[in-house]
Image (cartoon, rainbow, N blue to C red; front, top):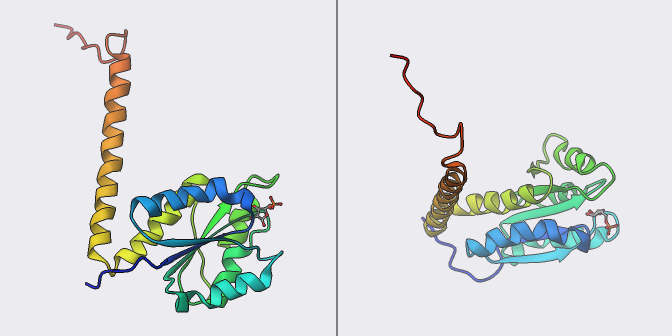
Length: 185
Ligand code: RP5
């Protein structure tokens, strides 16, 4: 398997507004944790359409392998990027409008046949998953990244086990929690 021996960005993160950054930071955190170099831009499908087209069309030449696009409201950013590149595009709907992301979810997901956007959940969980999904795509050609992803999964599992122990400890000794049932004989 070929390994990604590069510090040049391989993921391009775009967001429609700087106000989207608190959500999109969840994506950057995962990419940093998995040691995946990325570039990050604010560019809007509606306010700076030419810039979006440039970033999308030039992506392959810059070494980009996956785009992640987060936008709220009438969220056309991911779709417009997908229209300009054949690289995979992951869309993050952002809950920044009075419709709390339902508008962005539909605008991002409901692409016409032939021009896909892999749409993740609305908000921070979706941004985090976008980073993981980008990593999973890149790991198809990178065995060491695949190992880091497996470690990440193991870390998630260990966190749940830790939480399980913590909750059990909080309830230990309380009536009804973990008390042994008396047998009726
Ligand atoms: C979208 O419109 C952005 O992605 C943002 O979520 C939303 C509102 O943008 P701002 O008015 O906060 O810049 O383009």
